[in-house]
Amino acid sequence: MKTKIISAANQKGGVGKTTTLVNLGAELARKRKVLVIDLDPQGNCSKTLTGQRDFKFEDTVAALFDKPKVVSIVDLIQPAKLNGNSIENLYVAPADVQLSRVIETSLTKINRERILEKQLAKLGDTYDFILLDTPPNLSLTTLNAIQASDLILIPVDSGAFSLDGISPLLEAVSEIKDDEGNYLILRNEVDSRNAIINEFIDEELEVVQDKLLPVSVRRSEHVGQANAVSSPVRFYKSGSLVNNDYRKLAAFLLNLM
Ligand SMILES: Nc1ncnc2c1ncn2[C@@H]1O[C@H](COP(=O)(O)OP(=O)(O)OP(=O)(O)O)[C@@H](O)[C@H]1O
Ligand SMILES: [Mg+2]
Figure: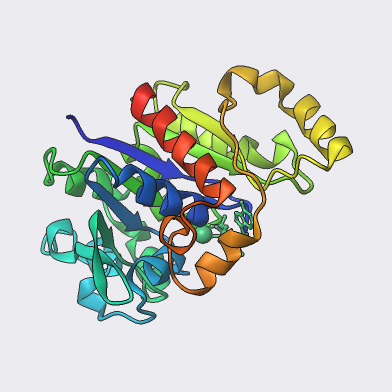
């Protein structure tokens, strides 16, 4: 299988980029080999997938962006872990706060938006899926992710959603990629009891109907609980309804790509 690269992006914070990628990764890993790359200095998906909070600089994505000619992505990849045990088929290249300084100093590098794409080429088709977690801004690592991606997944929450909010991201996508069709919007934290808000969001999304994923992710307390113990929901409460949503999302993407 040719590697499929998917990033989660939305410059709005807290919409579920990290949570979605982690849980999508865990579901895809049931059948496929999956690598999650953390491109966010907040390091949230690194914490969940390693149980670790701090990393040696040379073990992180920061080293890669700092010295792309010397450091290889291959050197950063480690098995994802749960309570110290490796999770089958799931791997992570971590990041932490050290990445923010490197992003600033990389702004003068030539071809800086293609650093990641070039590195991923080194992996050949080792992984079936590579999932990229991006920060809540259009910084250098986000642009690298867009450049390298086959598909950009845009989670939107059920709060004050507006299409205006994601238009800078969509502009960046169409500027970087020739093919403008490679993004899909995912409704996250959907509460079916909240009819008025749902109707409002449906109206707002009408103009991008063809970009809206037919699968959405419900709001569930199990998501926060699983995050709190650094676990994908799949291992925390496999029977949870929200995990069915992640499973359906994984099945849809497996079928699509
Ligand atoms: N489906 C869900 N149900 C309940 N809580 C959720 C759900 N999805 C995400 N959350 C919660 O929302 C918060 C933000 O999620 P997350 O960190 O994934 O967002 P993010 O977009 O990655 O944020 P940032 O922009 O800071 O990186 C977390 O506390 C997470 O537990
Ligand atoms: Mg995040």
